[in-house]
Structure formats: C-alpha cells, structure tokens
Amino acid sequence: MSIADDFPVVVHSEEGLFRNSDLPKASGLKKAAVLVPLIRVDDAWHLLFIVRASNPKDRHSGQVAFPGGRHEETDSSLIQTALRETEEEIGIHAKHINVISSLSAYVTVSDYAVTPVVAVVDWPQALTLQSNEVARTLSLPVQWLCNRSNFSLRARNTLDTQSNARHPVIVYKEQQGAVLWGATARMTINCLKAFSDGELTVTPPMTIDW
Image (cartoon, rainbow, N blue to C red):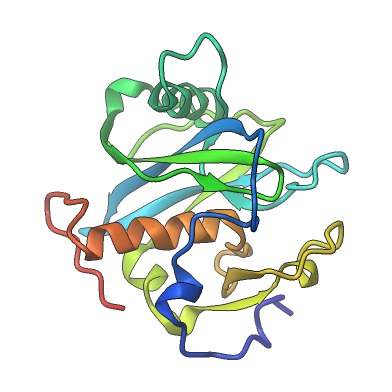
C-alpha cells in the first residue's frame, strides 16, 4: 500500500502550502542548489526528478528529489552548483539547459539553504546516471502536480522515522512506484506558484490550474 493512500484530501490554505522553511528559526546554514528541470513530454510540461539510490547510511535513501547538491568553493554561483550537480548525477550538460530563474532558497531540516534553479531542458536526452547516488529518474506532469486532490499535508515524523519533527510536509500520491514529499514537494509547489503568479514564464505558456 502507498504511504499516501490514507491521506485525507483537505482544502489547503495559501499559508499552509507556500513556505520557504522547514525550521522556525535558522542560522549557520550551508548553501546548496538544485535544478528544477522542465521538459516537454507529449506536448505537455513535466518536471524531471531523480529517485535516490538505496543506501542505509543515507537518511534520504530512495527519496524523490531534484538533481543538485552542496555549493562548492570552486562553483562560481549557485546556478553553477545546480548545473554541475545535474551533469554529475544524470549526465545532462549545461549546453542542453536553459536557465529561467532562481527561486528563494528553501531551508531544510538538515540546515541547508537550498536554492531551486528553474530551467528548461532539451528533451529527450540520453541520461548517464551516477549509480551510487541515483537509482532512476521519473517525470511528472505539471497538471498532475498542481491538482490539489493529488497531495496533502502530514506530520513529518510519520514519514521520516529518524525525526521527531511534527511540522507539516506536503506528500503526493504514489506515482511510478515513488512518493514525492518533503522539501522537494515544497519547492515543486513554490515553483508552480511562481508560474501561476506570472513571476516565471515559459514558451509555450504553462497553464497552472489550482
């Protein structure tokens, strides 16, 4: 059974959905960046995600995420961090990535300020996965992601058994054997809101129907 099968479908408040932190207060944060890759599949916009490889030493093992990682001193910018990590993790070179913009950093429970870099990726691509970090990729349609019947809120510690935190996290219904939840789900929602508010644009236009 999917861990999302018994989630109640609730009416979400704007305040409850759109936030930029998992923590009430944050200091001494480490910098990181992820790529939010938009791709065209069957004439529709999708977001491309990775599924992390299984690793008993990694608390994020098996989770759905965006390609990305910690900012290195050799990176010229957080955008460069996202591009470098994307090439390392799934083999897409920067020449195939058209960066649209960066969103506000998202603060995670692991004390990272993660900057989402939104971009359109030439598609299809022959991917080369970094097998010790990435098990596979999956794409999810934007229209499915913005359908409120497909996600809900749940206390974090009901999904992350290593955490005592009970702050609400967004959890999507299972798709393709994986569940999108947590910080990546929040960044997904924030990205879609930026498009629906007209802060980000893409061609052909993206229709967000909340």
